[in-house]
Length: 199
Image 1 (cartoon, one colour):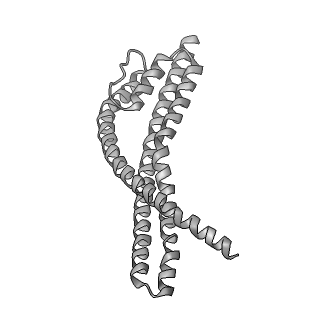
Image 2 (tube, one colour; image 1 turned 90 degrees about the vertical axis):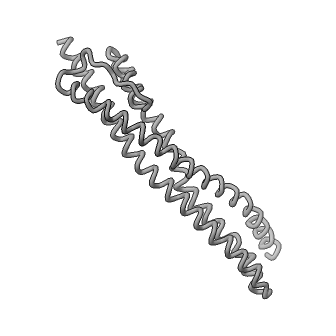
Image 3 (cartoon, helix red, strand yellow; image 1 turned 135 degrees about the vertical axis):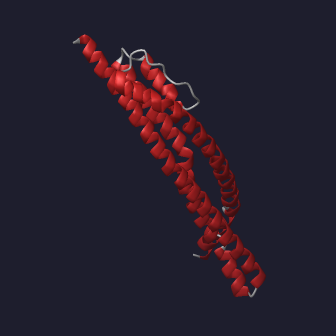
């Protein structure tokens, strides 16, 4: 039993370095995600100003002879593809499915951060506790204090990463749900206009 305990102890202490390295990587990744989120927010604001008049015009006069606004938001690209697939219901369904897949892919990074951050933070908390208790038992207070400092630091970093990932995921999910609603609306209008032509 003592041998098994030593093996488990070696495994857990050996994981400490990878856990800290991955946590630091995720922390930097979360900061980069905040920067890209701000860029996305600004570009979406510009696109929404262009898209709002288009949607009002479509609701009033239909889709005929309506020009798609140009911008750097994926919604506008998929909107253009929908308009190009006016005569193919199958292709319109495929475009909507591709949009859902593309948005799920964009959310994968922040979703991973929201889950991995707290998990790695907890691992970084528990792993140094063993050496800290050994230091306490042997009267080495300095060693115990150092290990406890590492434990609490990894917890804080892990929670920060998780919080950033969670908040960004929630906001982006609302964005993409609204985008999908608008694309579905245009697809339904195309179907309605096509049915009027055939009847």
